[in-house]
Length: 314
Image 1 (tube, rainbow, N blue to C red):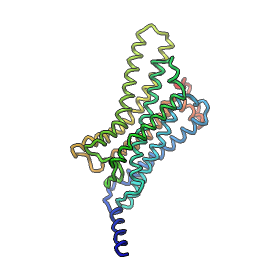
Image 2 (cartoon, rainbow, N blue to C red):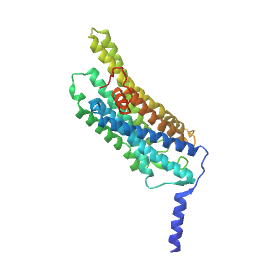
Image 3 (cartoon, rainbow, N blue to C red):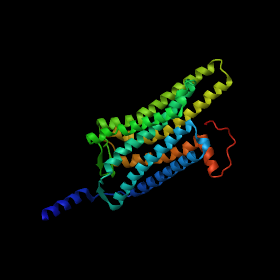
Image 4 (cartoon, helix red, strand yellow):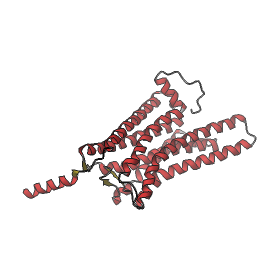
């Protein structure tokens, strides 16, 4: 019996021991919780407005709903991670709970589906501009299928981390993530989450810019050229949203490269997630600003006078 008690006590000490807490840890934890909570609230509000306002029941708004939904999923998981970090910092302990690895896996999943949610509007606008007669790509069924496919990819690619045990508990940063060091996992994750979707969006935008310039040189009806320019404006707005995500992920990428030479700062995840968490709130604000139908519905919802400008998104 004494042996059993000793083993239990040893296990508890191993799983929950004292750790050093810097003075700036808790303020950053609280800031993360506040910004993520605001982003989640905005995502919920936008989803409810789109559902209740029949003028928003269009094919392009399906893609906006997907962005809001992925923001909600990503923000909720990151909020749970931030609360876990704050609890450990307040108690000044290092402790890995039973859900830590799952939150780590889900963080890559949520970030992946969120980034791919910006690729889908770019593909939609590309098909409308370059192939306007191919109505198959403009149907709600096709967009829902592509959304489902992006979610399958998002949930699928991080499963590898669970099989090879890449996600571990980082005591200094109080988080379960793939450690930043030269490895297949740390190259594989950013490639799937950031490089592929962001790179494809930029390629689509550049191809559309070239296409519109070529069309403007030809003898084209003025209304057709105006339509192309308006559609290109929508793609440009999507690129801006993606660039917000890209900039927010730049510190993480920089620390990953520095880790190859063992020069990454000790609290790299804490610093990187400051930018990631803040970007979620900025993205939701920008999404409302750039989506005229959503902006009009929000103004209607809060009883503000409508904008007299003609909206360019259906």
